[in-house]
Image (cartoon, rainbow, N blue to C red; front, side):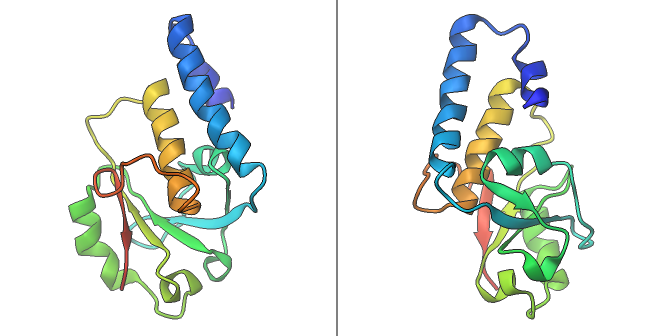
Length: 150
């Protein structure tokens, strides 16, 4: 959790405690769940590692073999949901298990968003909701991310 520790520096104690409670809630729930194999790809189907720590904290395990991935998260810095909705359909392979099971997630990169502790915790919550639907509901689906069906 080192990247979060760096982001927590300078926050007042009340804010740190609030964010830690949110993280603890996710951590407690996923403790009893299987780690979900997740491939994180850009619009060229190249694997991405930018979100590896967030995925791990949200109950996922970064998977490099696309055929072993239960979920595929399409994320690319600078790409909005609209960009991803336009570009992703042409790069999907219908033989991938995640495609067959409609487990494709498009994650918005809000280019104006700063990398803050609040945003990092929110992203971890969002990824937990993506990977464990029904166990988490944080309410950002449709705004920050969407489930994409072929």
